[in-house]
Length: 175
Figure 1 (tube, rainbow, N blue to C red):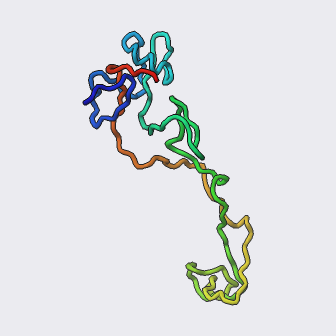
Figure 2: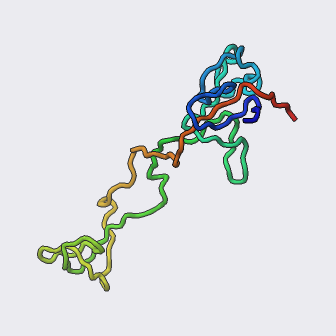
C-alpha cells in the first residue's frame, strides 16, 4: 500500500483499523496525539478545538464531493444531508385520483373486477358491460384519504465496509 496523505480517507474490507489510521466514526481524538491531522481538519467534524477534535462520521453515510454543479445542491465539507427514514406526505405526492365510479345501468354481476357500482338488480351490484352507460363520480367524501404518517425506509442498496482516515503519512502541501 502506498504511503497515504495525512487526512486521506480510504475504504477497508475488514473491521480492524490499520496502524496510522483512525476510524471514520465521529470519535473524539486528542489534538496532542494527532496534531498534523487536526491541522488539516480542525473541528469540522466536532470536538472542542482546545484538546479534542472528531473524525468524520461515515457510519451509515455516503460520501459526497464538496461543491455543486448545474441543477445540483451545494455541499460543504462536514455537512450532513439526507435521511435514512422518511415520511412521504400527501402534499408531496403527484396529483392523482382514486375514482369510485357508478352507473345508472343495471347490475349483472357480484364481481368487483373491471366493474362499476351499478343500479341494484337482485343479488348483483356491479355492471361489467358499461358501454353506453354514463359513469358518474361518487362524492369525494366516500373515497379514502391517501398517504399516512408511517415512515418508510429510504436506504439505497448498501454494502458495509470501513472508512478510515490517515493520521500518519505525507503532509499534503497546498497549491
